[in-house]
Length: 263
Image (cartoon, rainbow, N blue to C red; front, side, top):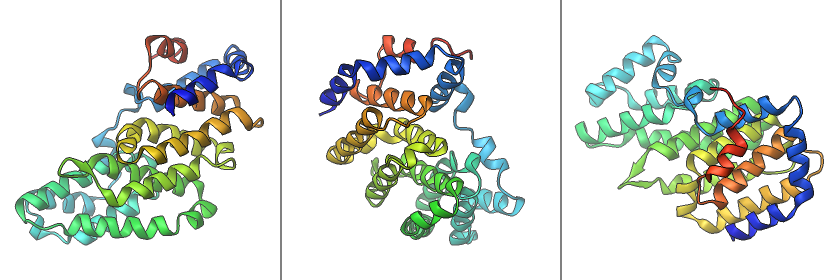
């Protein structure tokens, strides 16, 4: 299935020439820099310090206590604080999963309970249920929600496996980002590509059929949606080739996408 998608993209020479023509314009540097950011190069590596400084002093103190002695902290209140901060701060939600993972591990090892994780998943389920209302109210908050859910999926495991409860919600969020109206919004396209780079491979291992369906949507958007911006078209092409190559890029493709980007 993956090979078929890749072949169809490469057979559509007109679309590819259109992208390459756009790349030779003055937009070239900006487009390539955006993709480089999505790929997780040093300028956008997850940074615990940025997540830490986004928290208020009270939450920082609760977090420190939770790591040292989980029984001494209201873990439900702490998880609520993380969720609330994530929905309003994109810099925090990018790496909030790592901090949540630290609390989950400390609680399991030192208290043999799972209060933090249980309440965290409950809050995420509530926010997920009202995701369309959130998107209609604020695309920024919606993007933060998707980023946070994917961050939790990326970091928190059970027996070294992703949380089963998050598999379908993550897919559903990515499917929504792949719809024609969302592909017209730069924030949503950026979020879609970044999260596929982040969790796409492990997500596919949980349900390859749903990943195929998602990439059919992306392929159709790239080939059939004529009103896409050049940057969106290039981001879609890159992620299609990224997955078709086994969630990596060949040296040739890497050079094609990143050779003109200054560090």
